[in-house]
Image 1 (cartoon, rainbow, N blue to C red):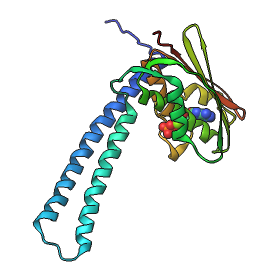
Image 2 (cartoon, rainbow, N blue to C red):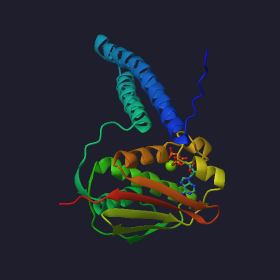
Image 3 (tube, protein in one colour):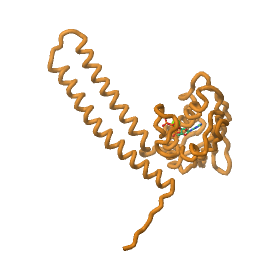
Image 4 (cartoon, rainbow, N blue to C red):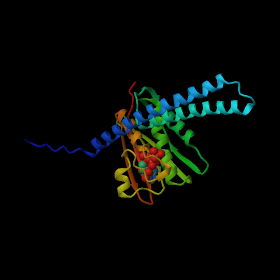
Length: 231
Ligand SMILES: Nc1ncnc2c1ncn2[C@@H]1O[C@H](COP(=O)(O)OP(=O)(O)OP(=O)(O)O)[C@@H](O)[C@H]1O
Ligand SMILES: [Mg+2]
């Protein structure tokens, strides 16, 4: 009998890991949603079956229903975070997408230095915004919400390159090597470590590239390259 050894590249290994996480999240959220469905039915039953005296019990039943709905949405969000579903690509301008991402991530203490230009791409605007939101959030974390983030665009040979640069804590070699891995995070309880994994996945689904350079205690630069849409 012959024995074969398969060696997976890091990229293949991450893809497998990601699939396993998505599978787990899908099964877990399905089960949790079933339980929530049961709770929701019980709340509905009590609100209809009994004429509850006084306002407090009724208000509590309403609260229970809305908390169940709330939890349901959070589970869906969690599931969304582990996988990128079908993209809805349309012709759009990357500059508009980046400006929206900046608006969504604005906080006191962070200023943006912008060198943006109009660049038509064929993309899913919401998913592409998610890419920039994730990267900007990482930069904000790295600078503890104080400092300047630079976003610079240029177009060369039908490719639009966008650099997101921060002067935050930067990454050591090990962090840089692992930062795109699913569920890799150095932020402990605060984060899940899926931001860059999903961002990279979205960029790849647009046949673009995402690359990172970083130096500990100096800062980080993320470069995203995407094809220009020729009209
Ligand atoms: N701009 C940055 N500066 C320094 N370290 C960074 C930067 N961006 C990412 N990292 C490192 O890469 C790790 C992975 O980043 P990623 O965005 O995937 O996960 P996270 O930010 O920890 O959690 P999540 O994005 O899921 O909330 C981070 O925990 C951090 O160690
Ligand atoms: Mg992140």
